[in-house]
Length: 301
Image 1 (cartoon, rainbow, N blue to C red):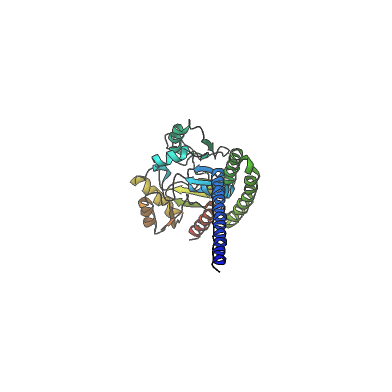
Image 2 (image 1 turned 90 degrees about the vertical axis):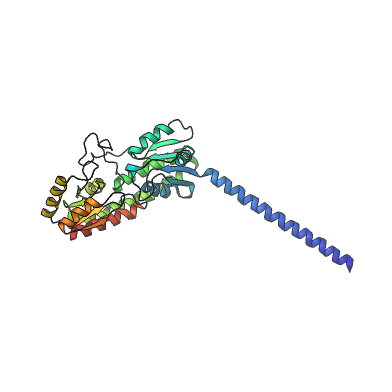
């Protein structure tokens, strides 16, 4: 009986050892696969949240996208941290969008051997920034191009091409995602146009003139409280209030990135309200719908 018991113990120990070995091998294989996946992931940087939406929709799990400017932050006041500069220098692609802060950033990163800097708005014709002269911080050109579905499609095309070049093995994947995204933006554009047709030619009042591309696309006009990047003088504010009263304006739209005091002054003087509009929300597709509905509601009052 003792021999049988010892034999059973040996068999049990052998089974234990085998099971442990199999588990260890499976763990090592999983870790190996995870390392391969991580190594193949395309490391991306973008400047603003709406670009992240495009990058993630195009790249899916093939990419890792990081944003320089988080939601609620102003691009006009942004300065990259040392940590961001180090991480950016180790990325594969940086999708720029012609913001002022990028000029200094690109100069610092130009000689980084692994990083490819791509101008994601290179195929978009920019508008002159409303009410700004040649000394404007944007260099006269309005950078808020992403607030128009056709422009977003052009950005997506540029980004997908860069991803396909950097990761040619997955080029077909990026192309397929681009085609789906193009169809979605086409449907979105049609929906917003139908919603805003009754208000063609109408003006909506905003603090910072971020919405010119949106307004132009849907035959609207934006009036800005801000003048050449600054809060209005008392005289300018008085003129704006008079104009708003004549046009029976009831809503002033403000962006969370800016001081709303001037907008509040106008709203109070005209007996109107202040409502938020966020040009930097990450889900730009959803945000454009929200913008359309918010503006439509404001113009209906």
